[in-house]
Image (tube, rainbow, N blue to C red; front, side):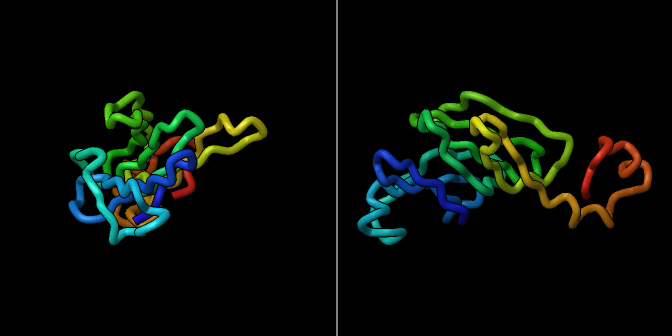
Length: 128
């Protein structure tokens, strides 16, 4: 699981247990993964890497869906970023003002199985 921490509360959110769920461990700093937990959100897909933004929103890359979803602290979806690759794996903020969202993907591993037509449809600069 790729952990994401809420710095103010010491919470941990990670992809453990059910393949479609992101779990929250409110006492993570004290008890780690053995402490109490509950489902933060049932993503309905395969959650992968997560990060927490300055407003407490959890950004999760959904593997196999070509998107990154931002969840509010109550678990509701506030934003979906769709990308032209299928296997998103993680997100990160960067740039001088930390306002640029970077998204990694594992499409390079699926590239050898893609048809020539599909490879030609990929955007300019595609690294996979």
